[in-house]
Image 1: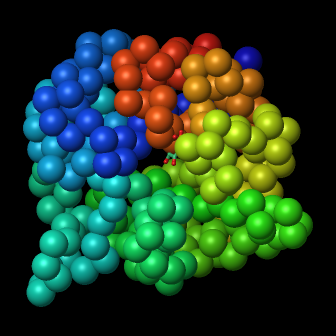
Image 2: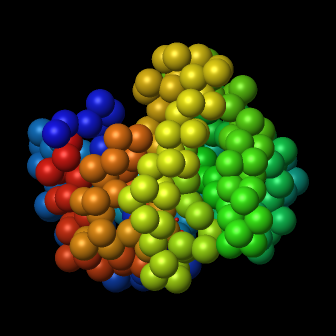
Length: 254
Ligand code: 13P
């Protein structure tokens, strides 16, 4: 089977691998990526490493930030703008991760502003959405996902295929509880259908990644689903073998 969209495998290192271990891992991943690879491979190290990781991967691996500020410049101590991330070598930025929503009070409105700022500067956003366990158990999964998607879909519609969307059910993140292939596909299909209501091209070209306890041994089943175009990987992205296992699964379906 071959996928209608080029698979994208992104490793979100979160607050990990922030020293020489991160540089070494990035270099090792780049050494495994082929010139004519059928998969886009991206790593999102801590911000302090972005510049150096960009240098060691030399364009073979995409580099992503884990967050961005919505303003281009100004009195916002401690923040980084999209333009600054671009200068540090990033092509991508993760926006609205559930940990940002939960621990840093990021709202749907802020996610929209950050997505707009990233696109304006020429960064490719990976915008995260997903329901909590309580929301799933209350039967509100699609209501929540649609609300989060509707908040920013108007800003991605004029650049179809540039932004990726990551569906990350909060209950599957770092818990070892992966969504079943069918549970994930159901939500991915609903997201794609919702995008079709905005534009057919947006729906056809947007890569929708699954995230939440993706490992080398469950990646193939997920990636074989029609509307799953890649993975946003946390824990399994911190080591070469487990991350490359997922990249290899994506190569099989590409
Ligand atoms: P885990 O793969 O560790 O569950 O994390 C998923 C995630 O949050 C990626 O952004």
